[in-house]
Length: 141
Image 1 (tube, helix red, strand yellow):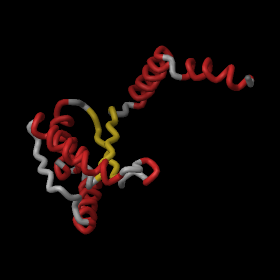
Image 2 (cartoon, rainbow, N blue to C red; image 1 turned 135 degrees about the vertical axis):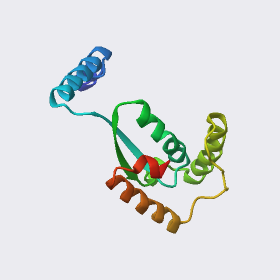
Image 3 (tube, helix red, strand yellow; image 1 turned 60 degrees about the vertical axis):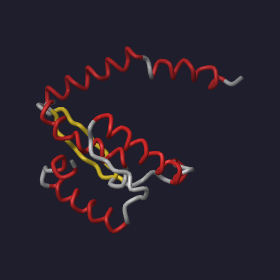
Image 4 (cartoon, rainbow, N blue to C red; image 1 turned 90 degrees about the horizontal axis):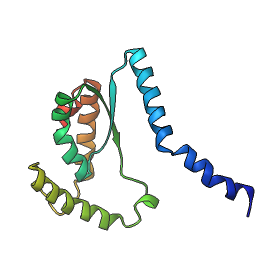
């Protein structure tokens, strides 16, 4: 057994200990306040992702309820190595989103297929422009 394999569990436990995490969060909050910076909500949105469509509908309410600044990021689908059964993942996400939408009273209709590439690009451009104008939540939702 190597020294590395002996030490790694202890090092990992220390790095991810709850007390350490809480201390890091408290320090970050002190720095944020000292700088007068707002709470920042980094939101990653994939135009053709059903879950993103659901979350986007609640963004305006979230921003009304909490004193946070929205920083949207438009992202593409995960790389192939991260989604090896992509067709199954996409089909399941549409079915799952339809069930979630019904439960949470959101709008989502599973058309049985993904949007066309041209539609995805059109919406992506609209959202980029909306983000630049500070209207992302209103346009995306």
